[in-house]
Image 1 (cartoon, one colour):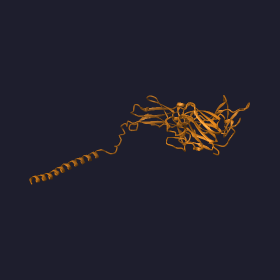
Image 2 (cartoon, rainbow, N blue to C red):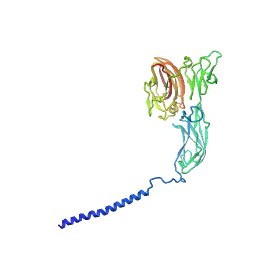
Image 3 (cartoon, rainbow, N blue to C red):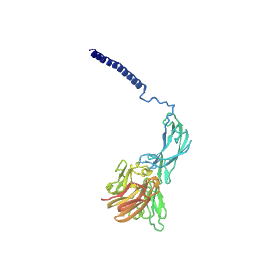
Length: 394
């Protein structure tokens, strides 16, 4: 009985000791958690504006292709990639190129010794205008003052900020000279009255022009030439073809084949068969020519892996023209050869010199062809956009 009672007495005392210890532990934990919770402020305190932030930011020159040449970055204009901008001031001079969004970025910081802009003072930013291009905004050189401002994102600010820089290609109509009689001159007249007398060397000419509709008024006049935002190259056989006033009835922009990255152009698109043409969003690839080569929308085409490409249809069609460039500055001046076929007979061949700064419009006027072959001399990727055709009845 004693043994049983002793065991029972022990069972009653032990839980009581656990209860006392347990409650003490629970109370201690709760007090600790409460103290920790209220000691740590969940939101950031007010910033001390007299202390440096230690950060850095970009100060940028934005460069754009000024489509309408009005000196204003407005609708229809496009960022330009690969344009060189220099910055000089206190500290070492620095240079950079505009990126895929058109920004030539310089790092500024009041504390980072590796920044391009580290010291307060007056700085000059100079845009290097490429050959055969012109400035439309009047600010090839611009100045700004940098001031230290602790507590700002970079601890240094520019007053005033830099202005956008607009560029546009020199506009021209170039191509072969027609056969002229003795004493006969070739004149180019713009709608509205301006007339240019044309002279050339080695059977070719190049005439500076303004945007608008132009027509040759002497010699064997061809169709009117519409000059928009880029230079125009007349096809080698342009003068030999009979005048057709009918405009293109099919415009291929590649914008209605939208894809996140790249897409092989399928046969049947715009009623044509496509071989080794690839459509891409202009920013998908790094080289500048893909972005500078786009004319409408965000998409354009190129020849896959730089190899030859072709467009064809069983029923003959007219290739009116299109905008062609090269994908990268590594291939500046690359030659594109376009060959037109009528069945098994070669009827046209045209060479075009390409640039990564922007395209040239080839006024091809290749009539009644069933296939067009496209090949670059050294297998670089060319860019193509806004291709125009007369398809007629399929």
